[in-house]
Amino acid sequence: MTVTIERLENNEVKLNIEVESAVSSFEYDKACKKLAQRVNVPGFRQGKAPKNILEKYVGIAALQREVLDSILPTIFENTIEENNFDLVTAPNVESFEFAEDKTLKVVAKFELKPEVNLQEYKGMNVEVEEFKNADDAVDKEIQNIAERMATLNDITDRKTTNTDLVNIDFSGYVDGEEIKGGSAKNYMLDLAHSNFIPGFAEQLVDKNSGEEFKINVKFPDEYHDEKLKCKDAEFNIKINSIKEKVLPEINDDFAKRVNAKFNNLDDLKADIKKYLDNAAKSENERRVAAKLFDTLISNTNIDIQDAMINREIQALMGEFKQRINMQGGNYDEMLEKEGHQKVYEQLKEEAIKRIKTSLIVGKIAQNENVQVTQEDIQNKIAGLANMYRTTTDNIVAEIQKNVNILHSLNQQVITEKVTNLLVENAKVNYKS
Image (cartoon, rainbow, N blue to C red; front, top):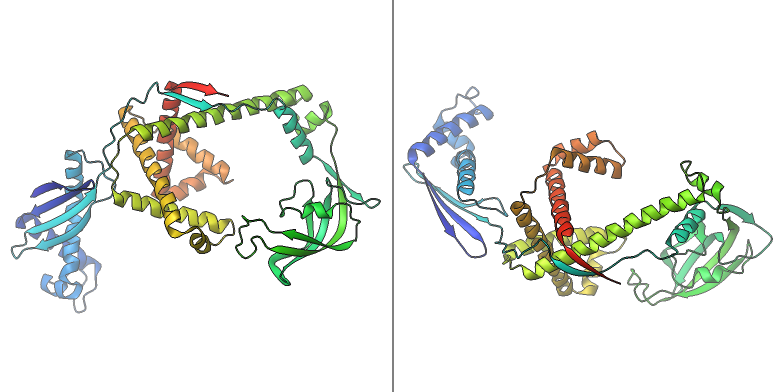
């Protein structure tokens, strides 16, 4: 057997494989016996059909493909290992030919990962804008907790204020036609924290329970529905009921209600401060990591082949489409509005960045011999189980059905370890 290796453009490798007739003939006969055991040939017992009959019944092409499936994996594996090839795509058989003497000739191609010429990545100097919690961050968080613990009292003796919650019926119209999805019954709206279009909640202030009236609003320029952008709308409103939010008094008893582990308000404040400090630390580490990778990407020469970029763009398009659909938008309409070329260029830029980041992480992991342990994977599985509110056994069962999940978890661990290595060794200058 001979394997001739040709290095092509765009990080492609071509293999010209020739397998001598003695080996290919042996494998061909073996394939006949295997297929004979799997197919029922009329007039013959299972596995007893002669080769010439089997060839007519299943087709010579099927038998030849069986030979390829038997021979090629080992050839590919040995060639890749001997030449230390780092593949992006699995080998693809472009053509094969069985000569009359049964000599087998195969042409296969695969893509290699681009060469990564890294600069020094330890002790990098970076300047980042430091994230700091506001001086009143603890007090604001306590206020947020109080808001969540507020009780609601029915109001019947006054008009609405901008801090009330109101139960309303509403229906909206544009150009005299009812807005699709623009009506509801018994909808509870927090006037202080409304996510309705600007001007809607404000016009529900100073109204009585049971009152019916009309309001006029204008949909914003950036509204997600193209048909409603910049449109004037009229809404019929009925106030069904008014509720007043009553906040608890913020004292030691309040702290104990939040969690029995707190003996007093100072304990609660200390716990919140610790949480906010950790969150600030994590955010600053994220900013440092982002700056480090941006710097590495800028300073590292990587010649990425177009095929690799196009595959990543397709993956990004799939993610983008799913995100738009989940938000209730229309992917095709958005694409038409933004322009196919503009969206493509934006995704191409992101695709190149993702590919370079992945290649840099892989190169550093190789240099530093970064390993993924069983404990690392177990921690990831436990995290997934907690996120999806299920058991680790269920996550393991999903992994067994889809090996790509395990590959993704491995990649996450490697990326985290490489990121931590970069951050820990970086020289950071924080600017306010």
